[in-house]
Image 1 (cartoon, rainbow, N blue to C red):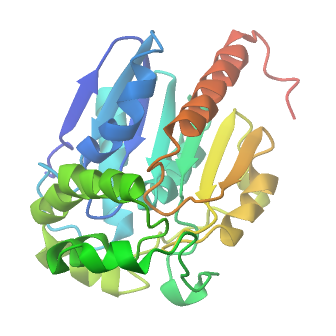
Image 2: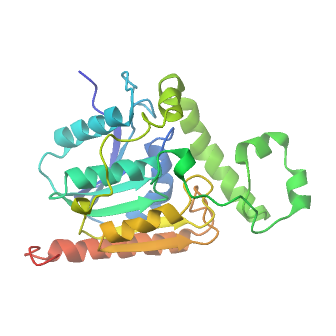
Length: 281
């Protein structure tokens, strides 16, 4: 039998299931969300590690369906019939949508950060990268190692470079090193294995609880235009595209990101306060 996912839980109260992106781990999500959630009492944050990532063994997962089913197993075991919230980043956002769809009667809120919409790379609507703030003199001074680590830098200022490097060295690179790439790489390389076998975009999949969708206008990985169609599927959604926002957001826009998340939590509280949701259409 497949093992239950490793998870780090913080706080008490309404469960919040937080799902990280591909080759990442729960600690990556903690970096950005804990400074916000620590100011919001009454939430039990559950940061999971997906199969083959973090401290969860791959246990022979073959495709995205297998990973999704491990999440379902974890939810059934840990949460049972409890109501809960779901947060997902990147590929975790793709899985979070599937979880919200399956547990629609239990999920009281959904937060999607730079969500993966098109699993097939060739189908993604992406812009060609171009730095917003170019500083060739600054970039020429960074080491070859840092240039490899950071890749294309959107905002080439000392403060942005420092924040970006801290995030890569603090959570991204350790997560990538911990990932079981012998298992994960074949899944990622195969468009059929990297997508769920069922659709998340049918009108029957509408989700009415408060939803926050945060995209980066300069997201070089999943873009932002593909996610616009989520507006029709999530009638209670706040949809925002952040300028200066890459797939790694937030880098230096923490105040705005925090305000958006706190607004989402307040809308969830309002939703949960309603005794009769049958009127909501």
